[in-house]
Length: 88
Image 1 (cartoon, rainbow, N blue to C red):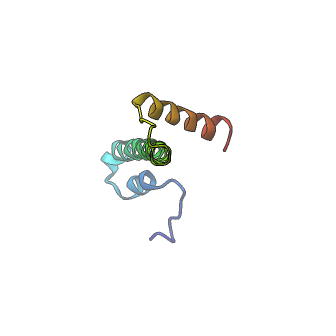
Image 2 (spheres, one colour):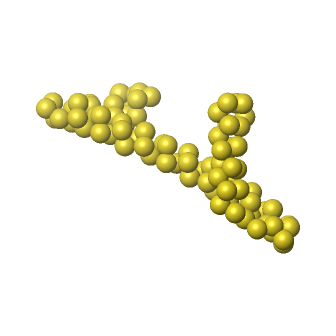
Image 3 (cartoon, rainbow, N blue to C red):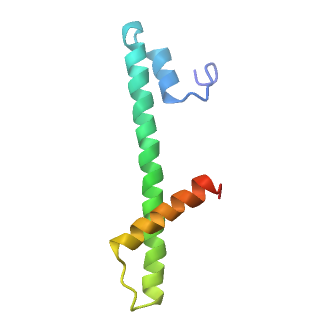
């Protein structure tokens, strides 16, 4: 079946193909919304992990360095700028 109906649309396309006629629109919308929320959450978690690892490496090499919440937040903002606006 996957070879017959290949698509880049993902889960919501398959939901529209396989769902009952009366529920296609709602289920496809729900599936696409959950997919979008999951992608946003995944991207945010990657930025948080990288920021935490970067600050942990600094704290490990400089024992007097104290990790503050503001430093973690600034590192996340810098990563967003770097990734999306500078294209890195």
